[in-house]
Amino acid sequence: MAPRYTAPKGTFDVLGPRSARYAALVARFADHAARSGYDLLVQPMFEDVEVFQRMGASTDVVRKEMYDFEDKGGRHVALRPEGTASAVRAYLEHHPTPPWKIWYAGPKFRYERPQKGRYRQHHEVGIEAIGTADPDLDVEVIALASAFYADLGLRRLTLRLTSLGDSVCRPPYRQALHEYLSARRDELCAEHADRVGDNPLRILDCKRDACIAAAEAAPRLLDNLCEDCDAHFTRVRAGLDAAGIAYDIDRSLVRGLDYYTRTTFEFAALALDAAQNAAGGGGRYDGLVEELGGPVTPGIGFGLGIERILDACDAEGVFPEPTDRLDVFVIDTTGGAAARDATLLLRAAGVRADRSFDGRSWKAQMKEAQRSGARFAVSIDADGMTVRTLTEKGEPQPVTAVTLVDSILERLQ
Picture 1 (spheres, rainbow, N blue to C red):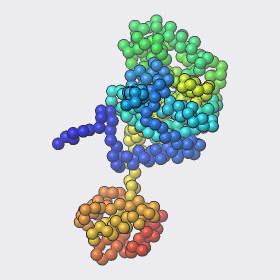
Picture 2 (cartoon, rainbow, N blue to C red):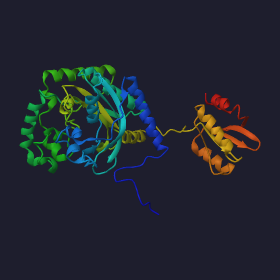
Picture 3 (cartoon, helix red, strand yellow):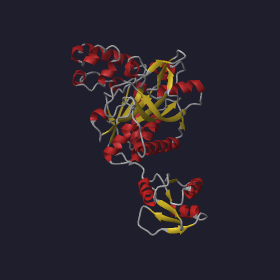
Picture 4 (cartoon, rainbow, N blue to C red):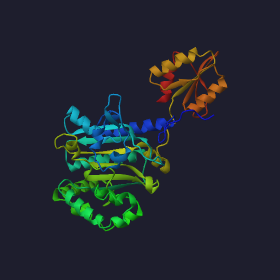
């Protein structure tokens, strides 16, 4: 019979053992972030809607993808569609000493048409570094993401890199681009034909053939950078070259949020379909703190989609689900009390241990032990206690309740 309730459209449940893979990925990312001096920030899942509206009125996330509503107190709030704006709000609220370097992990919410690789609730890991405009920090941020992907075993990745300029060089460029595209309005796709004035840069990122053809000869921002932005981008490229991090200069890279300035980047997983192969990205947002009411404060960060990363790992056959969820499975045919006491004793010693319940037969418990992935089985019956290896053939070895913990710890070394 079909269940009465199912997960909402565009969302999903993550059960074990796949959920252990999520946890392992976040733990791996946390290690990389900690090694680079980033502290964990635990963010609220909803904010005042204006926190996200400051990302840019022409951004699709703001225009039509936010889950926003009035709460019971009449406050207009929105579920978190991305992590940067929330981090900037926290920076302004708590006044940490800059540069403030944080990482986060958690769900993001966007109301969009669900399709392969795109969900209404997805999960991300990310970092933000707020308080310095040093281009070497851009290199650090990109290198952290690159090292994390490599640690997972991903090899078929490409890094797309560009600069989106700043408040000096972008306005005149935007005007030139607007004039160029306005003259070709009839050639643009239906979505962008009436939105040339909103944000002409977004048209450069359109994947429809009509916009690609119309924008083919459009002026490019990289050819119109001011002296400071050009020097910044040159330093970033020199740092990536020194680190041995390959990249492709992408003159059409815009990304989906209006707050990006200067260094902007995106990682593409070549093992996935081209339409859904963005595995994460980010860039500078040197004006966002001001948009949220703060002083002039530069920042940079990225967000990496966990589901998209795991899809890429599957496509490349790397970072499999953990197979060693348990160390020991306890089998007890004497009534269950001995298994209860043994598992608690082992867990207190740091051993991952589980057991069967409901007085099942020895055979049924052994099948459960083998399915659990445990390395060892402790079997308790009327004749005593034995330890056997589940991962290879071997005779069971007798132990006692007194020697059990030491015996298991010795085997786990």
